[in-house]
Image (cartoon, rainbow, N blue to C red):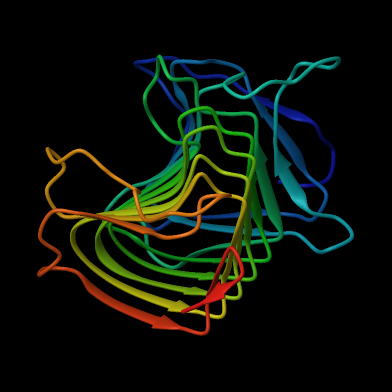
Length: 239
């Protein structure tokens, strides 16, 4: 996909554009994509997606609202399926997606492997990025101003490095049997920086959190969670 943008992506609850298995799609720097439906996925990725922008010309998935874009203006931008292999998101901005009525994140990675770096996930209404049994690497990325969950991890293995979580309702939520490595990240001004939840039926509590949301919520038995924390800042607290 070249710079001749914006591109308007049409989908509904039953029909979505599909990148077929073993096919490769390249999105060039500076491309703007605008999903058009609140109840569909703009692109289902069964193949390999290389969306590689630059710091000066990022790729952007954004709202079609010209005057006042809002969280939830469109449904899901991308869904990576188990058939997808080796996709890369580099210098990509995702914003204003994910209405609660659709109950799907702006970007979902389901049993696929992916690398995300130098990117931004912001202003989602329900959840910005969801990893389900995925093998993911996230580096130099920003999660900010998301009204519910910035990053949800459900199983799989995820490494997060040099990433910034700011002003989200929940910075990172982990459940199921997850392997997570956090190195040199910053959590700032989130209502709940990190929730580690093995039993989703257990309500969450952050009684130990200080002003501004410092602290880690631990709901239920964490015996199945393998987490490594190295040199991360939770609202100014080094862990």
